[in-house]
Length: 351
Figure (cartoon, rainbow, N blue to C red):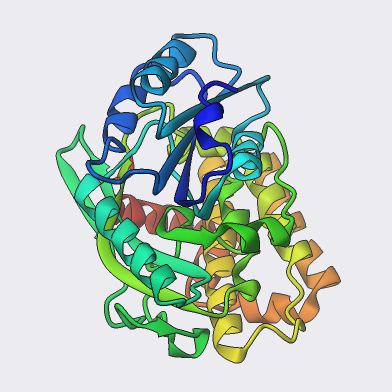
């Protein structure tokens, strides 16, 4: 593990894990955004080279050599995004943990503000389980962007509980890139991330939430999500080709969440259902986009499994605004699902 000696016995404020697989074309832009002035030993960046066959490792090593006080490198056999995130979490020395994908970047000024706020809270012995920040979706090919912020839905600046959260818009949700977790809390959640599987970030954005009691929203446009490339997992063509992986993650979310958990308050339950309904809608829409008999059978089987194994959850999901219109039967239902997809694509500019 390159750069490890500088981190022995260190007490970092924040660890940022950067999973990287064949990322030579954009890794430098990602890591440059983490070259922050005057952070001392507050920040740790762990680059996890997940068996890349291009120059990813060589580029990462340049940053480790030039900035050994900040950057570390983990080399591992290819295990997929989940395996890379798990390796970063296991090696993290920071009090808080954040993930930056190697083809994205952060706003450096916003990251400095996040570090300052965490440092201030730690100095005041204000224990925060989860920091929430904004994401900006940037489609450089179309020259458009859209901010995902949470003004009016959660209080900004204050430490609050789930009872203060009101997600009134179906297009608003806490993606994994909005979340900075307490490292010990995330480790204690003991989430098993499947190897060689896309979309595992949904597990990390959902399953640890019942353990989060003290939250703080910082209205910072921190994460810059680069979208629009044809090889990205959120590209509709790629998602349709990997629909079995998305369905597997969707089903793992359903199986692993116990809504009778006493830690889940009514307010948190509302949000968890809000997020789960969105993921179910994405699965359903992309099965409709596939337009095959096999995909239609998978759609029916998916909802039948929920109805048979979790009937109460099925009733809560099936008739929500985000799910009901895209899950109508027959040709008309597939038409409506495609219309919803086009509306979402226009809204977020993701393809």
